[in-house]
Image 1 (cartoon, rainbow, N blue to C red):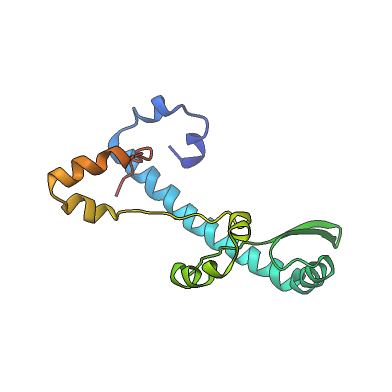
Image 2: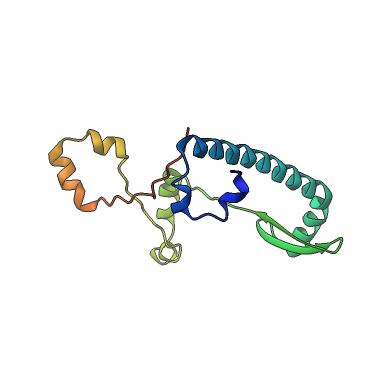
Length: 148
């Protein structure tokens, strides 16, 4: 059996394949996945080299430092994305925010988050854990089973 046949099989049928064959298929898929990731990365680099300056100009014309810009270059639709993650220094904000009026602070939609690290919770005495349980929600991801 080869990995191309997997796409046409149901998970139930795949589960009936002998264990050693599953292991070989899994290794083959992993090897191809690594190769495809490397190929995708090289293609991304090639696109950056070829269209990077054009996209930079387009981004400047649109006044965008982040987000998505789209254009057509060499008759190809090109999309370029720059993500943005912002973090705030809570201690510094705590010193700055009192200088604003209540109305200004309300407009900023300030959020305060209180969390307890899971390790600290696990190490807490049982009576403290019991008290905290009312404010604790645990969700689980789907189980993923793979071969090593």
